[in-house]
Amino acid sequence: MNFGQWLNSLTWIDHIVILFIFSACGWLAHLTMKGFRKLVDKTQNSPYSEEFRSSPFILFVIAVPYTIILYKLIGVYIIELFKSTF
Image 1 (cartoon, rainbow, N blue to C red):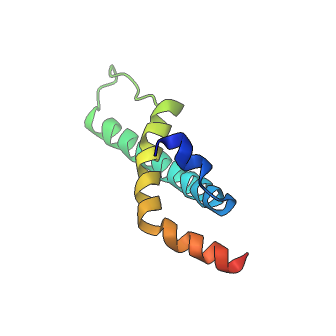
Image 2 (image 1 turned 30 degrees about the horizontal axis):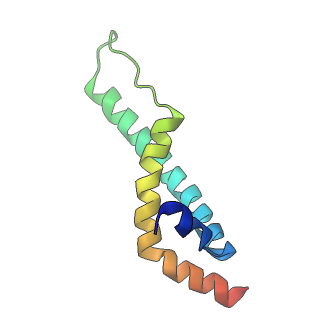
């Protein structure tokens, strides 16, 4: 099954759970980038060093693996919770 077929086989609850997990992982990715920025600033005390700049692409690159890991770990439990609630 390819990615498109898998997406089409999901229910609306699955889509909501993935969106919720992705937004939480976006926040975790933002915290990771802030921590990495502090680490770079701490190690480079030179006034001539370049500023660490991040882009939205890097945010998504970090957030996607977080999303996959969290969905594999707790996605089933959240889906069952939503199915029993709605």
